[in-house]
Image 1 (cartoon, rainbow, N blue to C red):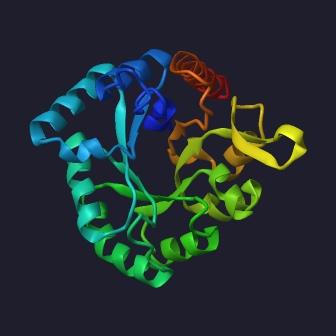
Image 2 (image 1 turned 180 degrees about the horizontal axis):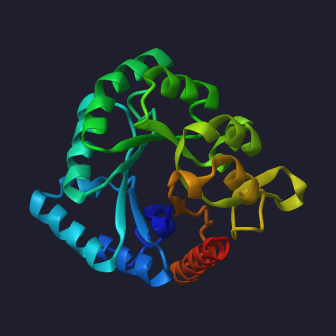
Length: 265
């Protein structure tokens, strides 16, 4: 089991609001400098445009930093997942995260199961595991129905318990239900705060250890050390009004999260 960062730990620094968005090479260097051993290139469509030479160079850069790569995308379309398997093989990736839905395709359980039954054997043959993330667009019960329906050790769950709160699912219940099937963990803390005038709440990220994520309980139930499951740092950092302050806090939150995880070993 290793700790690392996702592109979501650099959300604002690679966004259109950045004066110059960070490159993958820069994110890899930052991952190494903060103590991470894994970098998950997640929801980063530009990777789909890389030719073999660019993918080989990225793999070499990661190797130079001593960093293992993971991938992340959205959707369960057969051709799309075949594209990511090709990229994964070129990069030496053994874990690809996905989600059931895309903007143009929202498969029901039966369709998603059928599509993944076609796709997962090729992933298994390549030694790559596909993980479906917990999130508000799909109930945890439906997500697990797909995973159980495919019934392969190379298809599991990417656990991110904060995502399902918007579906009125309790994080503790999501952890309990998915624990046996987890293949990857997204680590981010979250909390509610009252809006001005006490009219409703804002649900947003916070420093790891200061919010509602019961990290210790999640680790007890999932057992990432025993099962070789990587923990990947992400953030829900609200925009701070200007890029400089937002980027500073994003870096601070990343360092705090990695340091917290390393101390928990």
